[in-house]
Image (tube, rainbow, N blue to C red):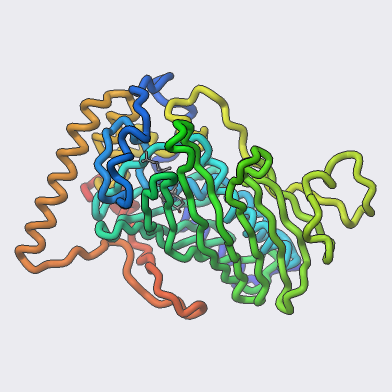
Length: 426
Ligand code: CLR
């Protein structure tokens, strides 16, 4: 199908605009950290946490050795690891298939939580983080828009999709487990490549939980129900992330279905969020074990065959802090990028940088220093009766869902481009 010229022109304009954000990323993603081993002191999590039962994360002061050299803003950028799924979704002609790949994208971000029992740095108010991938055709931006409660507003864009939302969590330490409940809604605008009209999808993230704290074997589990909705067609995908039970085989399970606008099952979805997710077009078979039937030996008819929708990238061992290769790319600051990035960018935080190179004592003193500076600024604002105003986002109401959300003012990349053209200061 030929696109109407105007739509294609609009998209080309968008691509040209996105490309301006690629300046600074010419050297490609970083392959490894400067250090080979983190050599952090091994302290029992329980020994530190046992006096903090009932507290939420914002009220916990933990030694910096419980941190990893990422910020919560970068943890949101981790959602971008599998954007290929969104490109695939846009290329599918059938809307329920598009939904299937969008749902796989929503589930894909959990793979990187494995082995990451560490606290990301809490962003300072007004801290920003940008991440662009010329090789993948997208750019991502997030700003810390509130400190109490901590809220990040994010906006990512590519030729065929825009992904945006709010990262805000409730957290509580229950003694046995430490639970993190994401609150915000995530929005996706998808522009099918066949020229069909732009679609709006939304979903909310499931609960992340640190379990095994008392037994000295802490791990991250992710559980809960996720509903991914296509507001344009009325189709939905329900995914059930099963809480880990006593048996090892019950870990990482996710199962669900894609329903058409009349509630009929079109696709059965299943697999493990740390590894692979499969789907099968067989109404009525939604309870079957998809992983088994995908093996060589299955005898079902061809159209009932489960196929692979998503597979997690491999996790090489030995990366400090158990980071993934994708996360290793996030805090890189090559000279070309240093010249254009905003002064508020996470990459310039001295405490996090010190952590990344293993200078833990310096990381701790710097963390104290920047947080004290932030408290001083807040007191000054309060004394003057002023309120913090985010620079790049403002509150708005979504016309499709009726919910409040953070509207990106699209100025960040424009300002960045002007500044770098003039070689001037932000
Ligand atoms: C989950 C997905 C959300 C953004 C988000 C916010 C908070 C993150 C959470 C994600 C993953 C788990 C997390 C949490 C903050 C603390 C917690 C990293 C990315 C860790 C596992 C808690 C470590 C326990 C300390 C006491 C050491 O969109």
